[in-house]
Length: 205
Image 1 (spheres, rainbow, N blue to C red):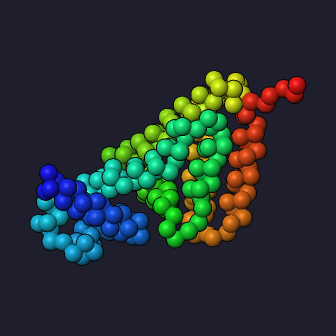
Image 2: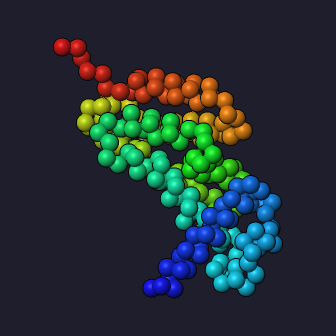
Image 3: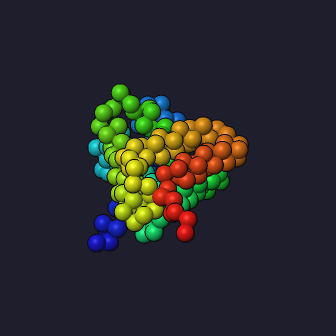
């Protein structure tokens, strides 16, 4: 048990450092020697934990990126009464600038999706599966919102979820090299208008 825990701690440390390296340089601009030097590992020690550079990156996706995206964009929606304010708040928090903002993982996800597109199908599929989990959960809470009377019955929940994800990823790209708070403000205001348009409006008494 102790060895298993120690191995998990080691894997987590190696994956955390690896994510920093790949995010800074890009996957294809990072050599195995770069990784070994940054981690202060021998090739033998590296291959004790991972089969290859690709296997190493897939471990990073599975152990870090999935968890962070889930914790920040999926979990907050699980117990909400009205999904629209909860979705808006999760996106607003995810766009909050800050040195320690863990949704830098959102930037990474978008970057890696672009980098691996048409270059590595296996890794692309792992990354796309993260979006699929988010999409499935968004559709689920939106449908529940319709049943509970928070969202208008005419709303296409699948289409709404696609729009929310696409707009978020696009805004993350626009904000990547910018500290311009106006971009975030404009985006959130437009989302508020969109959510108001799809909300179920109670008839006045």
